[in-house]
Amino acid sequence: MVMHELKIIYPDDLLLSLKETPIEFEELARVLLAVKLYELGKVTTGMAARLAGMNRVSFLFTLKRFGLSPLGVDPQELSQDFKNA
Image 1 (spheres, helix red, strand yellow):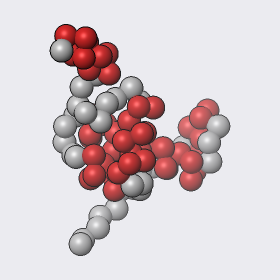
Image 2 (cartoon, one colour; image 1 turned 90 degrees about the vertical axis):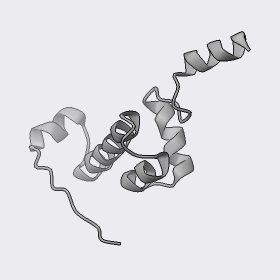
Image 3 (cartoon, one colour; image 1 turned 45 degrees about the vertical axis):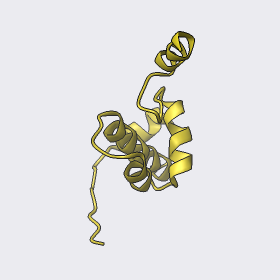
Image 4 (cartoon, one colour; image 1 turned 30 degrees about the vertical axis):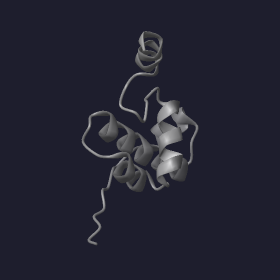
């Protein structure tokens, strides 16, 4: 499989304001990119997990951290569906 690399230039000021090391920021950036692509429906959870550098189960749990559901619906919407069922 051919792999590509994305380079993002960022200033030290960003790291200072986030209080993160370069490694922590770069890991977060990968996760945020994967989560957003999943949220937009551009990639599956499996592909997003690979992009984020984690297994699929870990990625599914990570989605909750960002207020997203692995089921593709809002948790409140799902709760309402259960009430209506």
